[in-house]
Image (cartoon, rainbow, N blue to C red; front, side):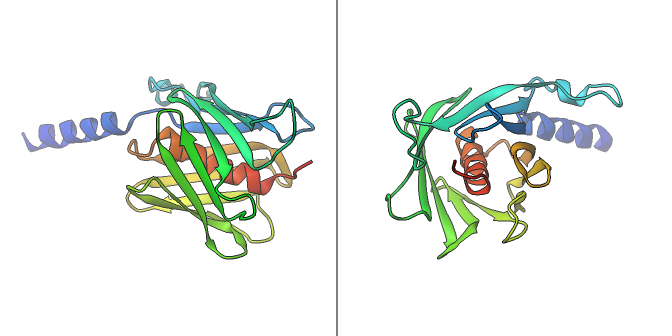
Length: 198
């Protein structure tokens, strides 16, 4: 009887945390960092049922791009699309690179602030309910970033090839309580601060 209770609790916990896990981010064009495509493993759990040695199934999850791409290249104003909706990411104040704000068209607001003045390698990301801390592994090389939260889980981004910021792997083991908007804020910070603005 105890074994049955433990098994049912484990299955319930697994079902509650199942959702789309981000898997990678890639530039849309080889020579530009103004448009990105984001991919995720399938939401139906098919990634757990693949045969040994087989690659999990990925699907296009969303996109991130400069907002006024056709008119001007303003690196302080971005827009994104995910299955939950659309929104914008902007510097809160144009002369302060340490404070960004993500706003969805449904009213969600995510604030991104650098933890230390003059240091853009450690960020606090919050929706005013809870906060996550995103850190670069190194201060002088921005190829690896990580969130390691004891309550919400782990989020890890790293380049497929050292020194090439066009393609990123994402290990998304965050709890289901972390919204797609919060994940988009994490992805944005990594991509924006790790790529050249050409």
